[in-house]
Image 1 (tube, rainbow, N blue to C red):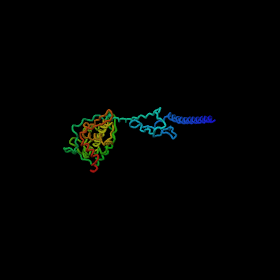
Image 2 (cartoon, helix red, strand yellow):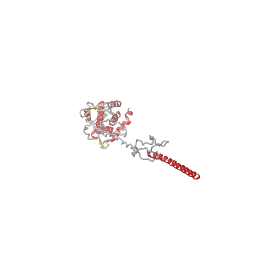
Image 3 (cartoon, one colour):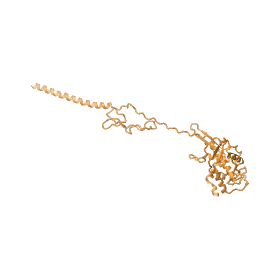
Image 4 (cartoon, rainbow, N blue to C red):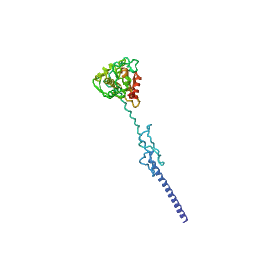
Length: 328
């Protein structure tokens, strides 16, 4: 009996021990399954795990690459969230391509000024010597007729400057010119004659605007007029007609048909105005505007050929100071 009882006890103990071993082995297998399952589902770099350990289906804004590339061409934002420790990071099956940098569109080059036919025809032959205003000449002027009052001269200059003249072009057409700046007309008349309407210079300059005899025939033909240089109105008409023709000549041949005499907003320079003032005194045949166009940028630059820069400077100074206002 004791021997049978001892055997039963031994079998019972052995059975309990085997059961515990099997239970322990089953527990380790369950944990291993969970670990293997996690490893079978890789988490993409940059995704955020939820509290339960599963990857978030939608990356946040800070984790997605920026749509705008940086200067180096790579996305400006980078993923910063590390993958879950329980998972082995593996490359995504479909990698995300960074947006290609967009090339900045080059600005369209500005077209070069195109010469306008007609008034850009060659001017008359240049005078052998530049006209010297009588007030700056060593030769004493004469007075074939009395001077008109300064107020009458000023009124005539203002009226003539404000006209929009029609210029007969060399190709048979016409061109309507804008009014001239009043201070330009008054400044040239002051520089040339001091607003003396009855003065005659030694070189033939007549009256307020010091119109040369050859200019009279030329301007009357260009503007289909019959102005008399011996009268105040006729003299001022001829002088302002010459200024209009010079604006058209240089504006059409060098500035693409633009007649703006105002300073350039960017540089403050007045190339067209300078050419017109210089040519009124020295003759258009002695004053030139040379242009050069860069074939790469299509940018046109110009240089002025002016033989009388001091005359130009004096007239522009008079335009600003307007001494005729003080003279009454």
